[in-house]
Amino acid sequence: MLNLPKLDAPHSNLSGRLKCPSEFLDPNFLKQVLEYIRANPSQELNLNQIAATVGFSPYHFARAFKVTTGLSPYQYVLRCRLELAQKLLQNQKRELAQVAAEAEFGNQSHMTSVFQRMLHTTPKRYQQKMSSITASCRIERSVI
Image 1 (cartoon, rainbow, N blue to C red):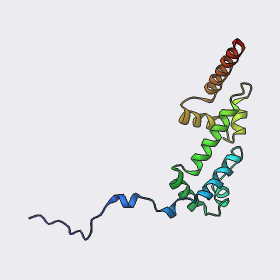
Image 2 (cartoon, helix red, strand yellow):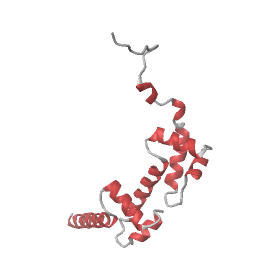
Image 3 (cartoon, rainbow, N blue to C red):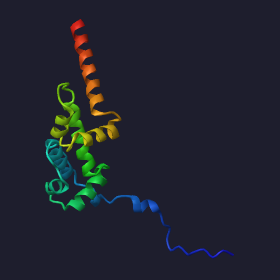
Image 4 (cartoon, rainbow, N blue to C red):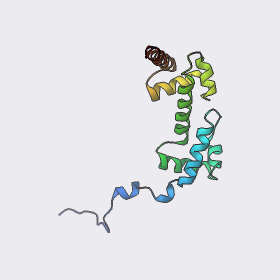
C-alpha cells in the first residue's frame, strides 16, 4: 500500500496565477499615465515621475502597470520613443544621432539596438525604406 500525503482540499495552481482586481491599475489612472507618457516621449521619463502622476510608489505602480498592460513602464516608454523615432525618420534629411537625441534614446547605439530588437531592422534601413515608399507615392500621384 502506498503512503500518499493527505490533502485537506483540492489545490489548483491556476488560482495562484489569476490576478486580483486590486492588482490592476484603475482605468482612469491608466489613461492618465498613458496620456502623460505619450505627451512626453522626448522627455527623460523615470519611474518615480510616472508613478507620481497617479500618486503611487514606484514599486506598486510598476507592478500594477505590468499586470494591467503586460508591459513594464520602461517597455511602454521605449515603444513610445520608437514610434516617435519612426515618425522623425520619415524625414530623409534627419541624422540618426539627431533622431536618437530627439526621441530621448540617449545615443544612436541604444536606438539601433531597440530598432533591431523590436522592428528587426536598423534605423538607417527603416529611413531608406520610408524614403523609397514616399518617392514611389510621389511618382504615383504625378502619374494620376
